Length: 322
Image 1 (tube, rainbow, N blue to C red):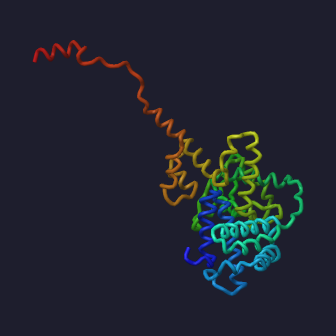
Image 2 (image 1 turned 30 degrees about the vertical axis):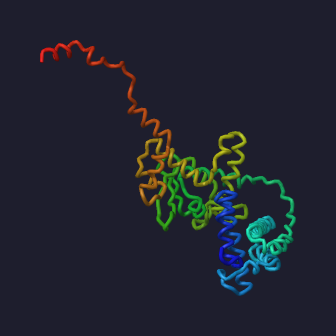
Image 3 (image 1 turned 90 degrees about the horizontal axis):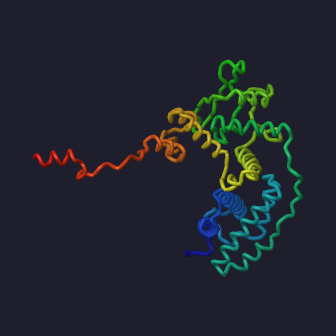
């Protein structure tokens, strides 16, 4: 690093060397650190009236960081826990810089004096009956359709077309996918009946899945919901604890189970909304159970070893007659 005073190169090294190289943190954690620093540098650049690439390490003063944390709570409405998490990122960056640049040790010490706030003790978390009903409907919907978290979050009641009776016609849902492309997926009768109870005669323009405040659930809320239930189930299924399960894992599960059920690859492509068949082919290439079944169909059965040509009397007679 030619100029140890510029902040940009230090941030880059911190993200690549420390988070990825030294700590090997999960991708979601890396993104959280990255987003926290992006918020901070934008705030301080505006405060000191500099371009972001012109910021120096010394521009990140304890006073500026305190103003940034105050802005998080008052302007952005962040909780104390989020505020403390952002501060922890600043502390980690300061320590990294001080370890590699001794002239910044004193600067690091001043940032280290910024204390964490004591958060209110959380109440015991539980689900209201309506929330449990929504979670069940959402998990069932994700598995039935293979929808992405964002697609489920954006689903409106008008996108759901329910059969007239449980035994006649077919319920389906129109999903707005990537690039605003539309696709239609069938719904199991059970999924349809659960959605009927969930929407409860609400207006067509309203979103199907709402959070506890009655506002549309976000894709982050769906991620949190899935992780919460995975944590509960993992207590009974230890093997699940070793897996990273997300809403996208449910999408992969839908595709794999469709493939195992004999659904052709083009139908699965349309079901999931893949632009290219190459994306869908990944499931056929990675599913070990499908490979095992394919291998069994062409297995070479064990047979008795054939006689050596020297033991074939008919062949010997033929050869002697030549």
